[in-house]
Amino acid sequence: MLSKILEKPNIPAGAKPMAKEFLATVFLYMFGALLITAITSWWFAESGYMFKLYNLETGSLNTLGYVIMFAPIGIVLAMQMAMQRLSVPVLGLMFLAYSLLLGMSLSFIFHVYSMGTIGLAFVSSAGAFGGMAILGYTTKTDLTKFGAIMYMGFIGIFIAVIANWFMQSSMLGYVISIVGVVVFTGLTAVEMQRLKWISEDPSLQGVTRKKLAIIGGLRLYILFINLFISLLSLFGGGRD
Image (tube, rainbow, N blue to C red; front, side):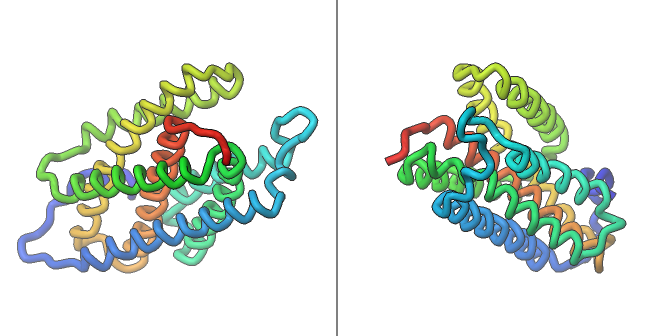
């Protein structure tokens, strides 16, 4: 199913699927998840629960910290790989759990960066994301091949982040952030075009369409979060 929707569908002449409703639902899922993540991360930081994830003597993550950090990876893989077997409510609950766990993971930013820097990174992310989403929706150019390159870059970033976890190289971290901004903004345009194709495909209806709306919201949410983190790392700045 997922491989099918990565290709541009042949839309029959005169077909008028509910494209606007589908895209509105996708963005509703995305914005709802962002709100949950923002509230969770702020509360987790301000309440002090964030420090339960770390070994205060060594400054490293404890067992619970590792679970919260890596559990979202398993959730998102399960959602996409088992989409056809999972029900709409289960997919929705998994998305909710994902956004909550990511909020807990991101709570550290309130103790590392100033509120001004966090706000600037968020506004910049929203501007870049919105611009590329509009570009992806309106462009007549097929971005599929461009998307394949961007996904290769995404995999490269993931590997580099894991490597830098052990190397602790500030220069490598800076390079990862720059490449991340390019890759995640580019993928935003690619994903938006893909979602437009889905919204216009009359063969994708009913429960399948509802599931694809959740997965679409999830993918846009992931891109926005990664873009935000990349920009936040570039802007830097200490806590007030």
